Image (cartoon, rainbow, N blue to C red; front, top):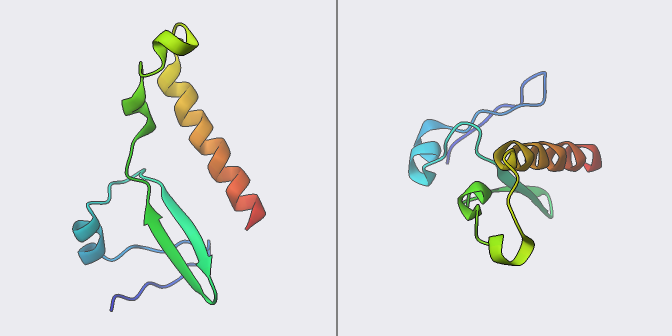
Length: 85
């Protein structure tokens, strides 16, 4: 079992063996789930920017700043999620 310590800034480091096993990357999002007295971290596998163009025929044209908008959306979501925690 791997161990992680909470820093003074409420951050944790994911041990190397887990990062390698799950193929985690810097900047990747982890969904946090509270289950009883436990915290479960689930990697968000699909990068939403890979879906670029999937709905072009449905939604119309894709803005030039699509990737920036997606990144900002993730940041907004993370901030909102942190406020609820």
